Amino acid sequence: MIIERAKDRRVIDPAPHRLPASVCRQIHRESERYMVQSTSAPASTSTENRHLGLALLVIASAQLMLVLDATIVNVALPTIRQALHFSTANLEWLVTGYALTYGGLLLFGGRTGDLYGKRRMFMAGIAAFAVASLLGGFATNETWLIVTRGLQGIGAAIASPTALSLIATNFPEGQSRDRALGIYAAMSGAGGAVGLLLGGLLTTYASWRWVFFVNVFIAAVVLALAPRVLNESDTASGKLDARGAITVTAGMISLVYGLTNAANHGWGALGTLLPLAIAAILLIAFIALEARHPQPLMPLSIFANRNRSGAYAIMFFIGSSIFSVFFFLTLYLQVIHGYSAIRTGLAFLPMAVAIMVSAVGISRVVTRIGVRVPLLIGPALACVGMFWMAQITATSGYLSLLGPLLVLAVGAGFCFVPLTTTAVAGVKPNETGLASALLNTSQQIGGAVGLSLLGTIAATATSNRLSEAHGQINQLVIAAATTHGYTQAFTLAAGLLLVALILSALVIRVQRPADQPLGDSQSGTSTP
Image (cartoon, rainbow, N blue to C red; front, side, top):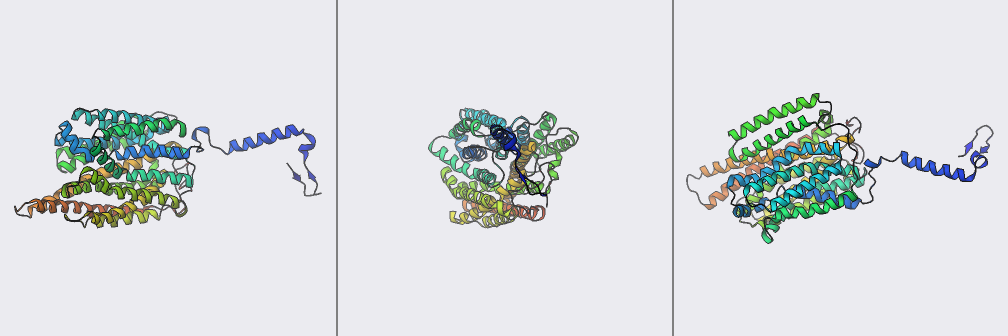
């Protein structure tokens, strides 16, 4: 160390004169080591990872597997019904059974990652999902297959929120994390379309059982690589809020069940009203429990952040509109135009590619432009695409669908990365799992609400159009009436996307680039 005295301008370097050179070198080495240690994060939470590429592959592959399983079974339903002699009512449970446990247990899954370690619970969720998939592939009756679908949802509810949290654990803030979030969001957004394509391919060229078996191979690779390429997070002290977990899970399951039932039996049916009433009671009780619990499952303070709460609301409306596209367009292509399973899957391929390309592309620039601009452009494009989709007729060809599908996909891709970034920014380290679980919950519950509401609108519009035919019913009239129901649903979906756009314009107030914290990591508040 050199000290320059101002008075006599003498330069003094005491160390070489008073200490042996070997001691000075040792002091220098120890000082350097101390400086490195003092500026590094603890080992358990360090974002230093020499295998970032493999880490991203593991997380993205797992998320894609979990998301696509919500739709991969759809195109195989006719084949499964014939093979296992399903009744019409029980066949619906292959779709709703997964949605019920997945949507109902997401908060619980996210919290377990915060308390017991994100990598540990991520692997536990993937393992449970794989075992359920294996059992499902060997199913010999309808009850067996329905139960395994519910078990798949439990595994997905644990693995999905922890997968998002692992991005924050393994990738440093800035371009690296933004790109990882872009890939993650692309997998989440395109998973539904990829599921339809993969389901069609497997059902056509292999067997419906491979719709389940394929998950086992993907999960095996993920479980083999995860301990080698993913850092573990710190575990939080305390215990899981069991009463809160049971209450909110039962409430979510009851809510999703009631909303799903409404699409099939109407809003006035006892099977709809009773579950919705129970859900309201349980969810109100959950909020009351959380407000008084010293270590709540869902700290209500997480909603104090204006931008984060806005992101949850926007994701709800995006999920409620876009998820319905997979359902109604699948029916439109197969029922109205007679598409096969594989042709239906291929029809959604451009949408999947457009979502992935736009999500990855926006992740590369969101660091410089921030999240506000994409969250204005994205919902606007999606709204235009959905309204354009509402103009189809029973005689429209595939090219008439391709344009609106691509516009809708690009708009959705623009939304997923900024919403993900906003939802997890500024949260306390031990609440990242909760923040990501709430975003996924918003998407899943939004999809259930949207499908129930839009399904009822479509059925009512179709029935009204058929009644106007005055008994002159033929295949052309039925096709026209059914398509009219779908277009009415798409029109309402465009309105839901307009609400998302309005929320984005009025609520989101992030002005800084996305590679900077959106709020105080300690307090969870943001700077407008």
